Amino acid sequence: MKKKLNLLFALMGLLLLACEVAPQEIVYGQVNCAHCNMTVSDSRYGAELVSSKGKAFMFDSAECLAAYLIDNPEKKQDAAFVLVTDFAKPNTLIDVKNAAFLQSENLPSPMGLFLTAFADKNTAGQFQQKHKGRLLSWEEAVLAVQNDEKPF
Amino acid sequence: MKNLSRHIVQITTLLLLAGLQVQATTLKVCATCPNTSIRKAIALAKPGDSIVVDGGVYREGTIDIKKPISLIGLNNPVLDGQFKGEILNIRSSYVTVQGFTLKDVEVSYLSDNAAIRVAEASHVKVLNNKIENAFFGIYLQRADSCEVRGNVVHGQATTESGSGNAIHLWYCDDIRVQDNKVSGHRDGIYFEFATNSHIQGNLSQGNLRYGLHFMFSDGNVYMGNTFRQNGAGVAVMYTKNIVMQDNLFEDNWGAAAYGLLLKDISRSVIKNNTFKRNTAGIYLEGSSKLDVQKNNFENNGWAVRLLSNCEQDTFRLNNFVGNTFDVATNGNTVLNYFSGNYWDKYNGYDLNKDKTGDVPYRPVSLYSMLVERVPPSVMFMRSFIVDLMDQVERVLPSFIPERLVDANPSMKRI
Image (cartoon, rainbow over all chains, first blue to last red; front, side):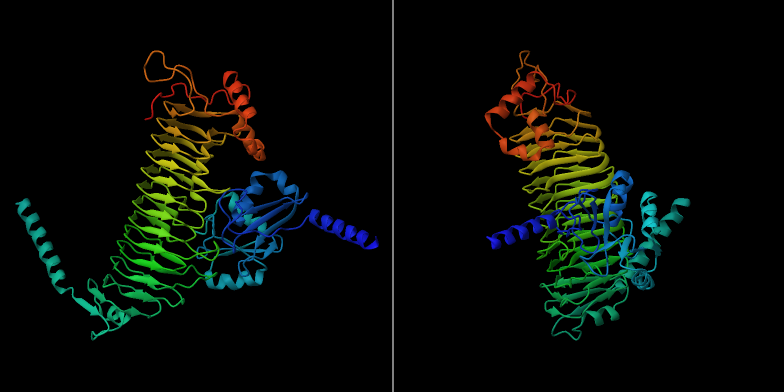
């Protein structure tokens, strides 16, 4: 009997975990971008928005994530996680607040704004030395998307 | 007198050109030739020379071409990239590469390695090559007035992030992409910021994502191409002034597959195409001022999915045959125009024998509205109650957009 109860508790625990508001893995090649509807396929550029209720929206690029937040300001208020991929570590999601963005004409991104995210300013700086361009914070990157600023 | 001097100038120019022709030499590369290296031959060549490579397998790493020469393969010479970097890197105008097999290009996360890269050049010709197992096949960047013709690009991609595009154009102008066969890549033909180009007679099939994909590429003409069995069909977005004519879109099945996905496309013509057995023949979002005429929509899940943020699109003289849903939409605002199409589901009559139905046809069914809102309700398809609902709704429209109507449906297939 006790065993069964334990099992029950374990199952309930699992269910609770399932309800947790957490980032989800982007399954490349399977999901469509919530903004531009394209299949998300480049694992160096995926982005994700998780609402306060735990619903995840996937994007093929940071530009699409930014454009989506510009179009849907209420989603911005309601966001639990706003994530982009670290270019240096494909498949790894990082918080936009800590991310550093490099806008360089030598690094084309999926939606034509040459916007690439890195885990920190140091790494972004290293790539900047090789690829040139300018460093941006997330807020500045959103502004660049809003004004459709390209690096040339 | 003026005429005479002009003649003299013309003749001198001709003579000068002839002189140049005589000077151009042909260098030969083969296993038994004095020259066995393509790199060396290129180093020896003068602008305007031809290098003829006769058979053999060449493992010379990345070969740079920085002067206007022709590189011609006879008896199928093979350039083996050995999964290290790129193979041909063309950085000069007036280069021709013809008749090679290029294989094994490294997959990289940090650089888009291509079998043939053309960068910052014009009047380059890439003809009749065979590219196998490459990350990117033919990659043109900041190029203009080039020709990519008769190539076969076949990848063995299994994941989208581990594969590049077969033919990739980025910031190009006036390019002709013709009679190529592309398969097994991420996107078959990919254009980003490529303008005023002509894409004709290509076959793009079995690619992981899109058969054809372009963004921000105005003024292009797509004619007589076939897009078949691609993971997500064809996607074109953020573009204006395009012509798509005589193309075939078929067998693009899947939850997120479209024969043709149009997003933010305007002032374009889609004419004489055939859409066969696609999940959605054409899906339109945010598209305006399109002229969709004389197309065949056959046996698709949805022939046309027209989101309500589209406006001033015209659908005329199209055939809708054997589709589960002819037209679906997601709202009640309809700012588009349907006229003179043939609908096989039309059961009106033509008493005055003018070959046009006397009662209008409403291509959106109540059930399609329901499916649009509650996707799982698709499981009630072809049930009696659904048919009944649709019939009642046709007689007394209350849910379906009233203005989405073809007032002159054709009685005969066009």
